Structure formats: C-alpha cells, structure tokens
Amino acid sequence: MRGRRALLPGTLLLAALPLLPAAFPVAPVPETRQAATLRVGLWTLWRDTVITVVPGVGGKASLHTCEGCRSEGLAKPLTIRAAGNLLALGDSRQVAAVWLEGPVSLAAHGERLALGRPLRIGARRGVLTLAVTLPVETYVEQVVASESGPADTPESLRALAIVVRSFALHSPRRHAEYELCDSTHCQLLHWGGSPERRPAAHSATLATAGETLWFRGRRAAAWFSQNCGGRTAAPGEVWPGSGRPAMPWLGSRADSYCTAGGTREWSAELSLEELTGTLAAAGLASPGWTSLTVARRGESGRAVTLRADETEIPAEDFRLAVGRAMGWSRILSNWFEVARAGDRFIFHGRGAGHGVGLCQAGAAAMAAGGQDTAQILGQYFPGAVASDEVTGRSWQRFKGPGFALETLDAGDARYLPDASRALAEAEKLSGLRAAGRVTVRAFATTPAFRDATLAPGWVAAFTEGNWIGTQPLRTLAERGMLGTVLRHEFLHALVEDQAGNRTPLWLREGLVETWNSEALNGKSRDRAKPAINLEQVDRVLAHAASQAESAAAHRAAGWFAARLLDRFGPDQVLAWLRSGIPASAAAAFP
View 1 (cartoon, rainbow, N blue to C red):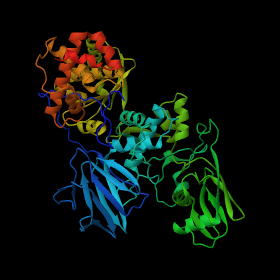
View 2: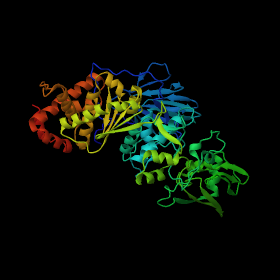
View 3: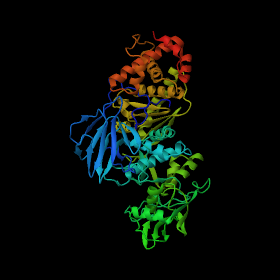
View 4: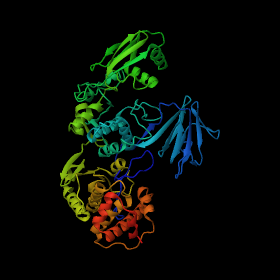
C-alpha cells in the first residue's frame, strides 16, 4: 500500500514519520490514561496440550519463567507441554508459566504462526493457555479485518471499529488468563491476518483512534452481530440472568436497513443423536430427552430459553454449544422455530449472530446509502455518541481550504490559519495539489497520540494517505514548530497521494525532506554523499532503532532525492514518483 511499510507480524502498518527538531523535544503530558494494551487469548478454541516455539529469523527471542526472573536467550526450538496446572519444558523443567519476548514462530494443531508480541504461556487442567499482549489499536484493527466483509465501506468500518473498541474496553472481563479471547465468545480475531481486508480496517481504526461509545456522560458497553434479521435484540434476550445493568441504548428495535436487500433466512437439520451428545458434552441436558421446544421468546421474537423435555436451556448457550461441536454454520441465530421429524430436528430461522447492538448488514446498507458513521451509530445505539475514551469529549471538526481539522479542544480553531499557510506552502514547494480534503487530527495529549499511531517517542506527527495525526497543537505552537511540522505532514500527504505501489520509500521520504529543507534553508543542499546506500536507507527508514539512526536515514534520502531533482528535473521525478524509478536513474548517484 502507498505510504505504508510493514513492521513485525501482528503490528499496525506505519507510514513515513517526520522527526522532531532536536531543539524542541515534546515531553509526555501527565494524565490518567486508558490501558494502552490488552491481553488476548491465542488459539482459545483449540485446547492445545503441546506447542513448539521457534526463535524468529533476524531477531533475538528470549524467555523467562517468572515475573522477576532474569531472561534467557531462546536459540533453538523449544517444546512446551501442559502438565496439569504446570508447564513441562523441553529440558525437563517444570514451571508455572513462560514469558516470551521477541520474534518467535509458534506451531500447534498443524498451524504455524509468526508472532512479534509479548506472549505468556501457562496451563490449566492439562490445557495450554496463551495470552498475547497487543496495543489496543492493533487489536481493534485485527478484529475489524477479521469481522468485516466486502459489503463494508469506510463509514460502516469506522462504526464497527468504534464498537469493537468499546466492547474491548467497556465489557466485563470473562476470562482468568486474559482479558479477551480470539473467538466469537468475545470478538473474532484471525491471527494469520486478512490481507484483503487489512488496509481498509487499518484506515478505519486510525480514523477513529481512541473513540468509544458514551451514554449521558458514561462509558457504554457495545456489541455487534452479522445480521439482525430485521430487528435487533436487547441484551437480556440473549444473556438472561447475567446481572448486566439496564442499557437504554441497547433496546430491541426494528431495522429496515438490514432487510433492504431481503431477509436472511436459514434452515438446518440436526439428528437427535448429534444434539444429545452436544448438549451432554456442554453440560446443558442429560441424555434421554426426546422433545425440544422454544420455552420463551423475547421482545424481538428470538428464543430466550429452550426446553428439552423438562430441562430449560438458555438459547444462546444452545447456539454456542452447537457451533463449537458441529460448526458455526448450523444454528446461525436464536431467532428460529424448531420441530421434530422422526429422529431429526428441523430448524428454520433468520439473521446471523446474537443480534445485540450494531447489525453489520444494516450498517453496510446505511453506508452504501450515504449515511455516515454518526448516523449508523445513532441507529443501533440511540442516545449514545462516539467520544474520546479518556475524556468523554466528542471530536469537533473545522474546515479549512483543502483540509479539515479534528480536535477535542474548540480553541484549536485558532490554528486554522497556520494550517492553511502550511498546506499552501507544501503545494507551492512540491507543485502538487491534494486530490481530496486532508484530515488533520490533533490529539489532546502526547500519550494519546502515541497510543493511536504507535509512533516512537521522537515523532511529532504521523501521516498516512490523506490522514495526519499530530501531538497537541498548543504544544507544537509553544515550541515554535507548528508551521514546520504541519508543512512537513502536508508534503507527506501530497506525496503519498501521488506515489505508486512501486515507488521506493527513500524517494517518498527524500522528496519531503528536500522540499521542506528548501523552505527552511533556501536552495542550499548538502553535497556530501551519504555513507549508506539506497538499500540501507530504505531498511533504516522502515525499522529505525533510534532517533539518531532515523535522522541519518532521512538526511540520506533527502540527498538522493535532491540529486534526482537536479539531474532530471521535477517533472520527470514526479512521473517516477507515480510509476517507479528505472534502473538507469542510478547514474545520478556517482
């Protein structure tokens, strides 16, 4: 993708990042912060008893066996087995848990996964428990990529991202070893990635970073399902007796958007033998029952409880038990009729999923009809609004010529003239024009900016495509660097709008460095050739280990880009920006 570069597996894809001037460090602002990370259960449905850990290529992996223990390097594959509530390591040691750091590859149940995030492995009753620590925004992105589909558009994906984040941060924890699992019990997360969905999910997550649902000044729990069948369900219909407090933003309501293209109906046939084994294994009903009926329905028409002879079974527990035992395509929802025919039970139903909260089918239809994220959330969570997770304030949007400023502080409107000048300067320096409106989102604090973008500490702002995220504008203005930073970011947005898929990172970064340097220093350029070559420049730009290393790579990229401009002229270089640089252009670098 243009303007993006891949980091370790499981991370967000980050765009080119400008440097802070060394004389103007931006220090974190003390504040009460939300949790920056989540512990997420890995492979929770597999119930693995053994796993093999292989150190990753090109990185240093390490492990330790207690919270305060000294780390030891992981140089060769390690087999870990569950032994009751302990782990048996390949070297015959038994420990309570293992913590892994650095890139590793995990192998179990015929699957292999490369992972670059901290991982804790424990055991409970002879089954391994794996918990991965993920940044909140990385988690949201991966769930949105896993749960979304081809009918989704930017607006419906943004609504989904806000709901996913709200569920992750506002719902009660239901697991002992981690905060969220990777199955539909919580929110589905495909660890191997969803390549075709990941770019759109990333954009939606970044555009809504830190936003969750609030109702009358309080954080609001939220859920979503695939297809509500034409009417959403209240939480009490799906989880009766759960002790959840009243949630007025989550009542059952008709949804004509879901059925605009027709009602999703389904049917299934399950044998008495299959159901008897499934319900017994789940502890829901002992063998010997012969009849299965709907005992009680909720306001939406969904089954709340079933009755197997005289045994009452929560309908949601029934659906989940069948899904785990026989596959999730059998009983798609709790909105069904059931009748016995010989030794088989015939189910006819509508919708897919529990039906509480946002309906993905309806949200996609609303977005396709031109409705925005706020209108989608208003349909499914009446009275609730998307607000900043830390402060509860809503983002305000101010329009300027060619850009829009999003901020939690209405006082930031005073910086609109600065942003207008910066964009005009960027367009004059580059000769480029923005194809669409550029969004500048000014975060209220440095920690909020870093949590949203995953940017390192030396970064003042972040650009991806036509979206720019910045540290607090007031902070940048007080340090005399607001105009410089905004011009730099607008240059990035203009370049990324033109860059083709084959355009190297060094050229994209180098053009921005060169043009911004011209604004600061005139046409004077450093004539000393860098000590590193283009391949090394690209590698360091993508994976800088320090501010000094990143600064050197950016200067080098600027030197190479300036040589191209001097030798071939801006028109030719801009054409290469779109198509890629031919090998013959290397003659510009004697």
